[in-house]
Length: 507
Image (cartoon, rainbow, N blue to C red; front, side, top):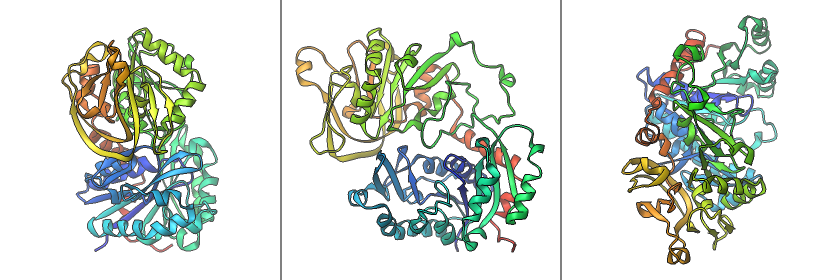
């Protein structure tokens, strides 16, 4: 028996494929079906640790939405951009240096048997596999080496939805143009068009959907209203155009206006948390819970002026720590962060951010590059050839200063790093000591107590840490997934979601 397969394709990147795939995973899981997500190839610096290695964060969340255990077969190929023309290749959870050096089209031919086998195994073991494409299936320059869109759809005989971001404009042209550039056999797999991020009067869409169906034979099966705070992180990039004010109720649909739950607190009561958004930022999805904490104002910053009102400054992970550190200096952010710390302001560095906070980056193997750190923690990082990839739980030791609330808190998280960090020996002899506040070199605090660096990703996803730091909880992931499923069940045409896992009627 092979599972029924449903695939979400997009007219562009950012059209809404990832969150719609997540919503479908929860919808079918709620029908009592055994469900698994799948994306043959993901390009993202947001990754999660699972059994066997690492996969894209989107597939990790999709697995949880499907009530399945996340595993490497769900995202067999992960590309982690290091430069504009270079990516680290992760195959079946493990970094593959040979593939990382290989030309794009040659790589696709090499890995197709691996990604196809992973898909076949998932199809054999589940009732439904919900698959996600990448970019657009109409990238005709890449069609000959496609291993993530229509080749996958045809391999699995998938019922495909094509989603577009109508907020960008040109939605009908995007849908028609994408459909028109597919082969006839590929077109037969498209079962419905989806208009995502709609704002305004839905009656003004007519006669567009009917005209599009007359041209293609494909119905528009859903018009999804804009939903700013659905609770899932953006898969790639920093999309906030303004500071995000935490509400603690992000799982509410857009019909639930601010007035429904009393509106936000006065701005004077907000804690402003600034996350430095350097070019190769990684694992930014771990900050999503901060958007949902009542009383927190989260913003992404790229200039010193944006740090003026910050209560906390966070240096997140980076896929190119030395290069991002050089960028940070070029913007003058190094001086602004040092001034903030000098005033006693809280500074947190996570993974690459921890490495930046130290005195130096030493790279004997050509992994990341040498560099001079910000000098806010008396530690030194040496990049190792071996990559640490593991789930981890650890307990904070006794803390002091701005981070004292974390004392004794047990947190779950994960590590993905090449660097190994230790106290700077000369500075330690002179009395400037980095205080270890987690075992195994996972976390360090400065003497004053306002600067904290840790390798453990995911602290803000642990409710115990949020309770300690903010005295508040955020919506659980399960409530977010159920909110997504409720949303599509409300806005898709009746019967469409069930029809996708039934044989297609001939057109």
